[in-house]
View 1 (cartoon, rainbow, N blue to C red):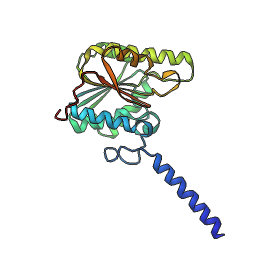
View 2: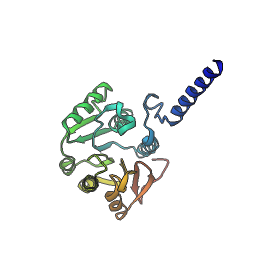
View 3: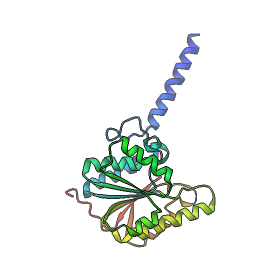
Length: 224
């Protein structure tokens, strides 16, 4: 009986250790319980660059429809960047065409007391970006859900390319671009837009599930 109990306890311990190893939090920036898994490292690098460049205007396409509950599944970037904005006197514009997604994201923004630093826009992202006339320091592309359907993949990739093209003139030499869901079949959301950017003076800093890009002449001055 003791042997059986020991085996069970060992199994439970191994399971918990495995879960702990896989758990990728943004603690102490965010509570430890939230697991950002495959996005954790790129979020950290992006926020490091945001700090160094004193980013003030952050634009996100595709809002956090599950709030912080979606940290592991979709990244909860609206809240991550919103909290960063609150701590660094910046502002986040997040746009989504889905009314329910906008409603849920706004509810989380309210729960986290980020209303003064985040505005959720209910709009088609292409129309919103076309009319956006502020300089953009950080652009996060994460709209148009991807799937295993080749036609949906093509439409998502084209949509992200068009999003970038609509806002391209509002980016500057030290702008930062982060693209979500890139490590997916057929190149993910970033396939077309990344090729487009690389042909126009941008370079990849981090290439994983998310791809982080800056311009070739981005200033890596620690004094920024």
